[in-house]
Image (cartoon, rainbow, N blue to C red; front, side, top):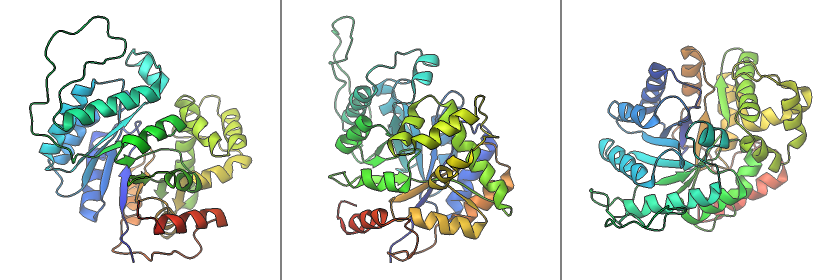
Length: 355
């Protein structure tokens, strides 16, 4: 028997402060391991996480994720150290390359060499959290720096985890080299297992499907489908490319053709793309959601399922309660793997001490 580890990840489109806090408090009450809040172009997630941290008791709070274009490494290190203190060690710093639309359109920063930028920032933040001084070798520095480099004015925090929200080949390499955790989006179970198997050292795999539980399975299906359509059609090419790399190019093409003006609340999924929705989401009645998430427990260390934006509170509560971690699960779940390849990868992963 092994413990079920579950977490909740919100989307950048969820901007209702009361709903965000209420969801985190319920997750804390029900024994969830982690609550992740992203940051894009609306709420400052670090301020929201501070508010949540002061109202919760045990749940780990994840900045999931902060863009490496929006803050300097020194600012990221200060933010992480402060939240680590305020939450008494319950904070995880999540970093990611974001997208060209946000880096250039919002932060007014050229989206160049994103994987290299992720590597540089992750190294610098870790160096500062470990007690080191700011580095001199800043790419593109216009003039030589003469001031003495400073260290973070707090005790070193080498234990503070850094998770990377990587989905491209090069950013996953950065994760393999530098991160404590991998927190990707738009991954199928098979795609997740295949990539996680390549890690050569212990890395927490925190990922999961977009999830909704409702008395009416059709309502739940519509909510998760619209969320996937929005990510694939309205968030640049980043997520679509990740899904195509996992072998679902035809479905992505069909979704793009059917949604010339995408909405996060009313996406259209053609018949030939329905199987992709099955791969990236879990929805239905509470019993169906519990069964669907059990399959993800086989391929992720922490199943961080996503909640689509704009759900009414009763659906959020139903989903959070349905997906809540039970005390234990069988190490082997009969019938949940959908092909022999995934079963083989799952078996290998469970026997590998890296995980």
